[in-house]
Length: 350
Image 1 (cartoon, rainbow, N blue to C red):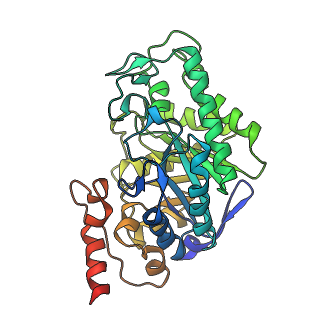
Image 2 (cartoon, rainbow, N blue to C red):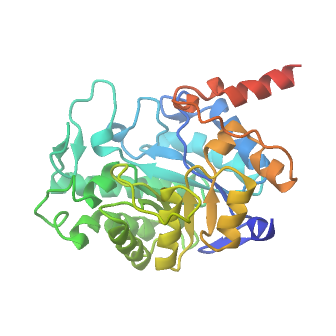
């Protein structure tokens, strides 16, 4: 596998190979925002098969910024004991573990909540006041500090997929006329201030990464975002999509998805590590992307949900249970309903 199983450093942390589990929410795997045994077992199985780094799923920095009622929480110290257990089970497998910190903004879905907030009046949300923006920045800082206290190696700030930070970055949703709207510098300001606050209270070795879109307004502007994130001090970029699914053009000869292409283009613009993602699921794809230096790390999501032994199977050149690409993905409902997971359970029962 050439470079695929080689080490690569992020900040002062050595990652043992180029495989990353991206942050994938496991709905119904937690109780009232707390880590439980099902959640621990999920991450433990993936870590035990040799992956280099796990980024734990989107974890809410405020109860009114959740994606769902059962989203994992980090907005209070009461979550630290469970999160510490999670970090510990991953570390026991010699795997680095980060946690993604998140606010959904206009995409918040909390039962009974009517006061939804965003960068501007957008869809069903109202514009945040300046005081509320500062409070949310401090929520991200407090979440990162809790993550370090729980033993995580770092955090990934969620600045993609149409959530709150993206609602500030995007020209489609940000119509503010103050220091957080209008110019490029103003629209990125919230990410800069979140970084500075986290950096101020965490240790020198604590990783601070950010997930971003490759199509935020355009590929060219996304490259500018990437360069600015690097200048601000972020330690790595995890490249996905921005506010919406507006596709960027990719060359006809590029063999993979346009999101992967976007990640490869952003890698050319920066010197910090870049993680690429989306429908990367077989040996040939992974080898090509790493060996040709198109990405620093490959995030395999659905592939590892379908086959907890993905990394071990790949290393040993064994058959992988490939994702069947169900529509909708059964993991969005309950991971136990995944047909590949059922197949493994039936095999183990026999």
